[in-house]
Length: 115
Image (cartoon, rainbow, N blue to C red; front, top):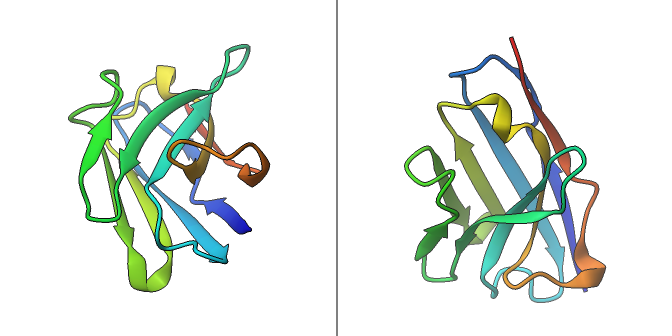
């Protein structure tokens, strides 16, 4: 079973940037497509970005051109570089496999975009 630990969230001003990390451990953690997801206050969790084992990426339209997902298979780590942040990006961000596994959700990391 894969264990996932997200980090890197925090408070940032509009227009700022953050880099999130997701450390994966456990059996088979490096051989799957991985994704970032987020849940804003009062809203359902949504998919944000996906990266395949080979490095192909895809993004939800609202973050395309601002966010970049990447992975380091040797470190079993997935990253999300977030630039030009807006208050609408405020959410708890999670990583998981793509598509996600119900029993693999971690605690997430909170990103707050506010002046």
